[in-house]
Length: 364
Image 1 (cartoon, rainbow, N blue to C red):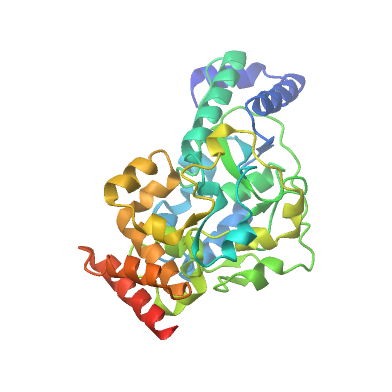
Image 2 (cartoon, one colour):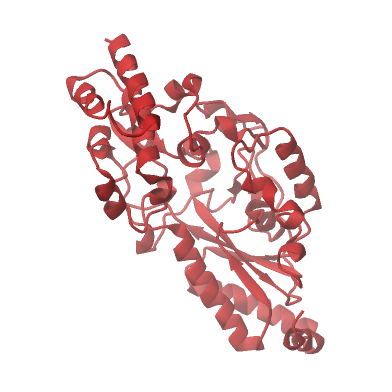
């Protein structure tokens, strides 16, 4: 721990730390965060669950989930000197986006997870977290900290739960009674001994809407997600061929999946975002599949600059849309679009296009 930080801790009385905690929360609200909470980082229970999840292979090809040992579940091992975690929530659902149910019900339209319709959230969150950390530094002097926005081995949901921002839902996402689950999470690891907030009890009860609605039945039990079956994993994290048996279940979802959130009763109380960063770009809230499938690699890179979608690359973009086109009702337009990509240089794209063309022929 830096000497300056030790000095701060040595002179910080309980009243001072409580006042600072309240000030941090106020600064966070001024920066647009829906809520700010403070937790102690004790993730012993979450660590046991993480190890069991990894042991069952539910992480699929996401090797990074196991690559950092216990740094993911022990904050002080990731950032030495950490004694508290400041967790934040940032709403992202764009107010003017097309109705997600209507898009899912239109097989010729492309469904993109609502979190990815605007600017890359990593940059938005990181900038605001850094500003918050700078304000803390201005009040207390030099202190040891690091900011995270889904960018390191961090158990975000578990940390947010410890900080009182909500509870872990049966779909494994964080839930809040006033904001549902349409929000991002971010953290500041700090060596400041701030007072902690009380965790919130679970309010899922006997509800199993998220389990029942999952198209691929990836939520294998309450609080247990087999990522290998999850459409978000299949369309974003998986680099190779999407398992043939799961392709028909993907429907028109080309990037991520929101079904478990759309089914959750608590999202009746969700708030839309006030940040222009998350406004819909490129009409991705409701665009024809054939239109997106026609983008060449340059168009893909230029149109999706600053978008989280860009990281999957043009090849997987075409792979995902080919599956959705295969699931759509047969039409000459779709057949022509697929045929135009049948000789694509990528074997990955060709395989999924061939599958889609076969699906189209068999559905006539």
